[in-house]
Image (cartoon, rainbow, N blue to C red):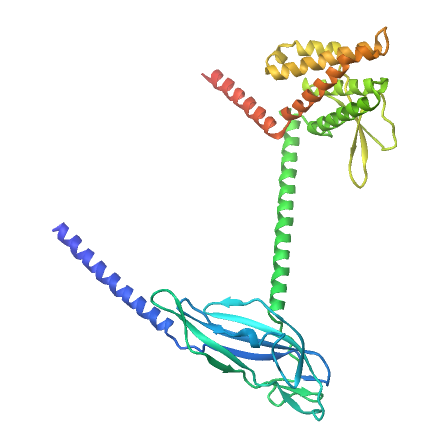
Length: 414
């Protein structure tokens, strides 16, 4: 009994769907077979009355039917601005606009700049010559090929222009028509798109600024509770970038004129600041005016565009303290590459101090090979230090730290 009820319900559903489909297809056929004019064109002028010899715009707009089954094909060669004849009017210039497709219609438009030089036309209504447009209806055959019908002609309606007098008798009003053409529509659309993109861009910038402000506020709140320390006035990655640039300058000056005492001092500054950053030790910042000269052991940073400021960065780290920190248990937990970086910093610092403050004084040419090798290694390791302080590396380190903390808390809870 239950199976028989299911069969009856299924049969009723099939009959209902079939009736609905036939009704919908009948309505669709009724809509698709509605009779419409295959082509419709009209004139429009920007001025209702002109003077003899005055230039004015005359716009021809046409609407043709275009569907998947059939479309109207126009012979546009006779209405191009360089070929159209509107005697007694003279076509001075003209332009063509891109077609616009809306629903089942295609719209195309031509705009002519014309004038008239004739006698005995003052105060008269001079009609635009009756222009004929040749067209054919192209239908799609069962085989899928397009088949064109016989040529037909469409005559534009009468349109008159008053010459140096009142408006024509068939004018709807006494005002000049100010409605735009397809070109105006395209221009307005372009302006609208530019304004839209600009608004979105400013909105995104404002959103990013708001997010950054919230992050800074959150970090400030966390720093007050002692969870996250406040960062310095200059990012660590920025300082590393200046260290790399300073090493490149030292290398270039060394190739040009050899080693000098000034290059040794600058290289010691790079080693001290780089060692402090690598070991997580604090560096000293000092904001000064651009005219203030930097002292020995200070690295200058220029910040700001409109009102530039000089920031002098230095490090209180000594060679002895650097050696102790490198041998510390915490430093031994670093990766092998990072420990090699720290060890190269210590060796470079010891070597530079020996040459700078040793009894033998400034090294001879034969003793500068160690300096060359140390400078080469510093360029490599400082660049590697920049990779350690890149955004992905910092995020990975932060995630690892959070994971270790979570594991430690989980172990304590058990």
